[in-house]
Amino acid sequence: MSRIARAALAGAIALAAPSAFAQTLTLASAAPVTTIDPHFHNVGPNNALTMHIFDRLVERDGRARPHPSLAESWRVISDTVWEFKLRQGVTWHDGRPFTADDVVFTFGRVPNVPNSPGGFQGFLRAITRVEVVDPHTIRLHTSAPHPLMPLDLASVSIVARHAAEGASTEDYNSGKAAIGTGPYRLVSYRLGDRVEMERNPNWFGGTEPWARVSYRIITNDGARTAALLAGDVDLIEQIPTSDLARLRRDARVTVTSIPSTRTVYIVPDYGREGGDPQVTDNAGNPLPANPFRDARVRRALSMAINRQALADQVMEGAGTATAQWLPEGAFGYNPAVRPRAYDPDGARRLLAEAGYPEGFRVTFSTPNDRWPNDGRLTQAVAQMWTRIGVRVQVQALPWTGFVPRRARYDFAVQLAAWGSSTGEGSNFLANVVATRDRVRLTGANNNARFSDPAFDDLLARASATLDDERREAMWHEATVRYAETEPYIQLIQYVNTWAVRRGMTHDPRMDERTIAMGVRPAR
Image 1 (spheres, rainbow, N blue to C red):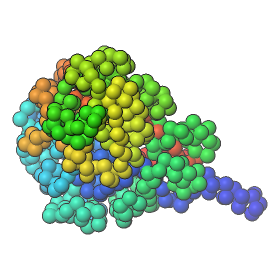
Image 2: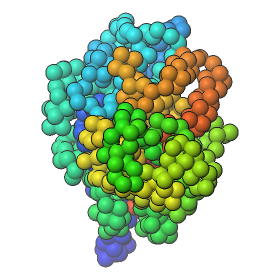
Image 3: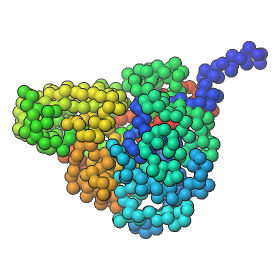
Image 4: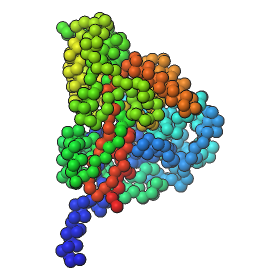
């Protein structure tokens, strides 16, 4: 081969997969990473990023199946005792050894992170005591059988006592406390811009192919697609639905997709009394009572929504109409529960029966840069509600402004989304539906101030049921009650999408997380 031919070939290879040879991988996140603290806020972008730096006792693959991580094995000692054998020879990024004491410290920290807007304590709710048998063996004691223990622990990042004791969330953001065991080390974090990481050559999972990972924040849909096609990034998540067909035809990229565990729903605030300026009659006078506490009002609002139109026209096929929180085929999905039929005439009659024959006015709040088409979905629902006499003012906010206001219960009605990372019915119930209770460690992400003892009881009984068939039947029962009472109004289940540059492969995940560990140079 001539020198000119060799040079041309080298150039072609560089164009095909520059990052594979430069050993730098650049990922584009569609939503901001708001902290490096893995216990502060249980939201997708933070969880995806912290997976690079921290490990968990149990890990989940892209299909939500558990496998060993910092715990190399586990077994049931009795109905109320689980034993976990910890992996030996694991070191923190600063070279100090990982031991059972770090797990004890982590479990004590998780429920007590100051100012957390929604943490991870629900995943530890069953544990009453942690027993250290030896530096690499722990036993977790529960008050009742808890078959979900391995799945729950796959959501809890383990931190180092020597780095995190007395540390604040800001100490993680600065890098001072961000000492993990994971495949990458934190180099720098710039809020709203990017996170830079470097490979951890001593990771127990093996050496990653990328020497550096740049995790860029590009919230604008069009800008993400443009950055990919310009070669500025190697992979983008949340492909804009308007670009999906075009990218599937583009030979320069590969599109990957998978059914999502994330569902989109509408959350009314049950804690509000009458006199709320965000919920008024048509003249602008606050209503004497909270209309959303009336199941007939919630049912009417649900009947006014054409979910199939949302899936077909707003999501352009990248979502499916649903009345529950898990995708078809997941453990706990109830095939008998279907979305409520679109019936605007029936909705008007039901509103009149509830005492609102002329409807009312409401402010509907939504992020406009967090989930695929979040603002568009809200606008579409608002138009559908207006047709039955419920006049809607949409308040769209960037995610960074939406989250703190959500934590303060500022919204009378809001759009929400949740990804059930365990792939089982318990996740949504324990964190989103269950009564917020700091003692029982439930409802950490219940932003509605909703409480129903029947759901709390179902959660407790099913979580303690060892028999899989019986437990799934209880999740089915909870789904039926949820669809009948509609404490939240379900809309659609997403389909997760990514686009990766030619010369690389990508393993899509049902939990929608974008991680460098799922990207490899093509062979």
